[in-house]
Every structure is written in C-alpha cells, then in structure tokens.
Length: 463
Image 1 (tube, rainbow, N blue to C red):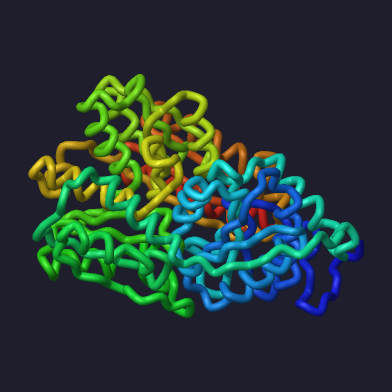
Image 2 (cartoon, rainbow, N blue to C red; image 1 turned 90 degrees about the horizontal axis):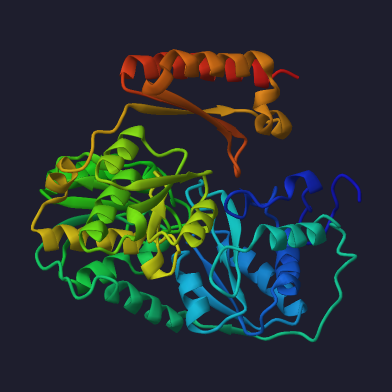
C-alpha cells in the first residue's frame, strides 16, 4: 500500500500510525482518526468479534463523536452486525451493558483525558473486557491494507438507538453502595463537560448528597479543558470555598476519578486503593490481603500496605495489565495511581463514578471525613513525572538503546539505592517519553528529574 491513501471520507493514516495503544486507538480528528479509518475499524471489529448479538456503541461529549459513531456504525453494519447506539455515557457503561444484554461486544468513542480536538475508539469483547491483544492485532491487520481491498460486504445489519439502556447502568451504580445513603453530605463534583454529565450528579443526588456541580453540562468544545481529573484546581477551590467534606473529578469518559479532601489535598488512586482495600481487609473480603497496582504507584503506599500485612503486586501501566493480573491472582481490588480503579465485585471495569460513590459511602459509614480517613493512611514519597516530547516512535520505545541516556538512568538509580527509584516509559497514546523519579527527599527528586528530562530531550530528539 502507498504511504497514505486518499478516500472520499478523508485521508487514511499511514500504517505506522495505526496501532492500538494502552487504551485503544487515539489521535487527532481529521488527521489520524478520520471517518475513513473509523468505518474500517467498525468493519474489522465486526469481523473479529466472535459472539452473536448486537454491538453497542457509546460516546463522550466531543463534537466529533457523532461523526465517528456514524462511521463505525456503517462499518459494523457492512460486516452484517446489528448495532445499538447508546449516545452520551461513561466508558464503563458499555461493558456493564454488554454483559447485561449478552451483546457480541462494544465500542466507546472517546479520547479519555485528551484535548477536545482528539478522539479515540476503545473496543470490548463479549465478556465486557478490553479486546485481547490478539484480536486487536487482527483488526490492525485489516486496517493496514488501507485501501479496503479485504472488505467483503455481508448482508447489511440494522441499527437501533437505545439510550434507555443506560437506566440499568445508573441502577447498578446505586445498588453498588448497598443502601448507604449520603443525606446532607456536602460534596463537589467536577464532571469535566464530559461523560460524567450523563449520570454523575443524578446518582449522588439520589443518595441525598448536598451537591455543588462544576462543568456539569456536556460540551465537546471544552471537555478536559482546565477541568476534571487532569486539572484539579477548580475542584480544590470549590471544596474549600463551599466547606464540602470531599470532591470528585472525572476524566472525559469517566472511567477515572481523582478526589480532593476537605483540606484541599489530592487523593489519588494509590490512596483510593489503600482506603478501599483497608475497608475490604477489615471485612475479610480481600483474598490474600492482595492489591494490584502499577509501576507508577508510590513507594510510601507500598510500604504502608506491607506494614498492614498486605501484598502489593505491580504491573505495567495500563488497566488491561491490572485486569489481567487480577484475573490471574484472584485479587479483589486493583488500579492505577491516575485514578483508574477496578473491583472484581463490580465487573472489573474501571469506573470513576462508582469509585467515587464507594469512597463517599465508606467515609460516611465510618463517620469520618475524607481528610480524617486519609490521615490514617500513608505518607507518600515525593514523586515527580515529566513528559518529554519525542516524536520518533522507535527512539521513544527503545530509549534504553541510547547509551548516554541509559547510563544516566543507571547512575540515578545507584545514587538513590533503596530510598528511591526511576521509571522511564513511552506513552502508548501520545508522542511522549514519561520520566518519573521518586525518593524520600524532594530535593533529590527535583535534581534527578531535571537531569533525566534534559538528557532525554538532548539525546532522543536528535535526527
């Protein structure tokens, strides 16, 4: 195939640009994620899914969402699939409804925490899990033909708009807190102009919470812009000014959540795992006292959890890795520092709204404010993450082959010994190399972060 192909529905990306990252396909609309690409993603997904039944499609609030959904629907129906469109919904609603209605699979149109001009496609199988790497590769193989030569039209499938199915998802959120109400509890929600606007305020209000809502309407032009889980300052300010006991911020598709306590302190995914895990441990509902986290989780969290007699398994970054480890070990709870939390009791799908409900209801049941409960948890080690722009994908992924940069990483690790660590990894969705340093002393963190980020910029961006 040529370097790029011209299609009536927009340019088709180069084969080197077509790859499922850590969380599906994602990129700039009309440059990478074009209608032409989305149509073929729909077709090849329809071919790759093995089960019978409808294919569900949800979307966040991005302005490009309807276009991408329409193209996916055209491809799926060309593959002979029946399609049920859900409209605006959180990503976790899709796997919940796949399982509820015995669907063949589902797709979510969202770029998660990315800016409004991006969009993405996440694919789920019949069990509600993210599509396996093998099936992702099968879709990629079809896409990399690019010219559509592998497409064989089947009997056309039909399409139904089914937004009423989301009532079951909302009911599942309410039932997850076991009738623990939040009557009169002052809470702030930052709904990020995104998917959480479909149900976040509704379910908290149904439990009696006294709500202050920020960015509470679906607005695809402002999704993730200086709000939500990637920009917590509006939430912090609102919690303090309103006298709320806690606040919750979601990302664009509401599969992640970060919290703020009544003192304005950030409560990240590590704290959520520790607090929720402690509650499960006290009830005897945590097999092997095990939690699953990623390599990004804080050393302070790990050592505090071990002091409670717990085990902490670490995986590579990405909820699919956490999911796989939880299935293998039988763990009840796992997640990422970024606020993506998975619970085996609730379908093993990262769900920011569900996680917020759990944290709020557990606090209320303990008759503690979130700040008081956090004070009983752990002291995080200073940790700093710097994103270095590295356009060359091969150099980004194979950074360890750059001898001067790799040598500096080793020097940093040797100097900190057991009191710190360095983590370098390539982003799966953006042209970034992420450099993280963690140590008991902030000055050491700042020193090595600056040196390593500067070296990455110097050595990895050479032509």
